[in-house]
Image 1 (cartoon, rainbow, N blue to C red):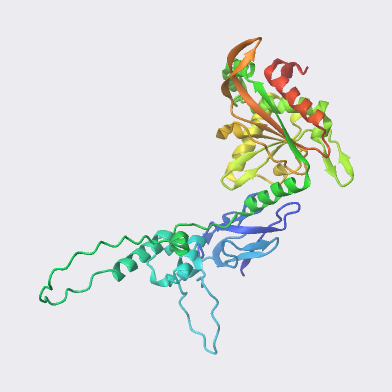
Image 2 (image 1 turned 45 degrees about the vertical axis):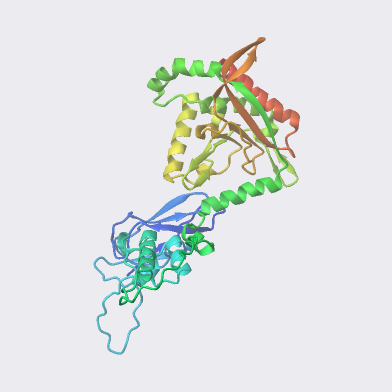
Length: 417
């Protein structure tokens, strides 16, 4: 009896996913707990594992299909059972029927499909060089190039005739450069947005449309923090097994400022203002699939080493696509470090329903006035984007000044003063 492969529960408020890729081909042997298919939601990417051993006998939801929770993705049949690519209609006297190979047109990527449709090609007439007999974009382009070469080949030379009287040679025509939408389309690649990127786009636009969003800026002198880090980084890593980075200091500085200015840690819920007396700090992480914001729970109760370990662990999970729904929800405030990509200044967008986000940037030597003299100091621009509906300008500016003061005198964080 076949075992159904179903879409599992995806988490709170998530009811649909997209089949990103099948990890086992049709007809492959399957063991219990083998990963079979990768699903992509608007928050995480997760694998669906086999609940029974046997053969992957049917795939009912191919890659790119949107599926709801509980939907059947495919079937696991008994080991060794022949797999048919399509159902066979039984007759009065059925006979064994060989399983037909999957058509090349059934496994086309979006870019290849568009190239074939635009040029009105038959995919079965093109030699495929991709994995499992799939057509690649290069296969189609080579076919088109060969067709153009054949069409433009010179005809057989005609019989010689008497040369006509010489005439003045007309000017050579200017070469015609192909142009137009069709040529442009051949040089484009259309890829469907992932559900994660679609959801990120929706949430960012929602934040712009809903919140009265403003950004205030300041700059911080990193001299003392760099000196402290350089002095203790080796012994810190040796004792705690994790590198001492800047993020733990900024998390600690933000928490101290949030405690003084609770509106920055709050949110609007209908007609209510919700002030939160806990500090779950989201840390924005860029991944190949899009931006995610895993949350460090109860950050105020963690040491510097605890914060660094938590951020490193969540960052690795994010890059590997292994974050759980719980690790991505419920943050009260977010910190985004565009400096790791070289950003000198930006205006971060709120992560709703949060009311504030702190943007860190690249540390760069700049001339600054110190006690009436110009000195070169390692400076960083800070940005706080905030929802003006709940946070006043005075509170926003004060918050950023408190972060600046703590970073410029990091011993205050250690002493909690």
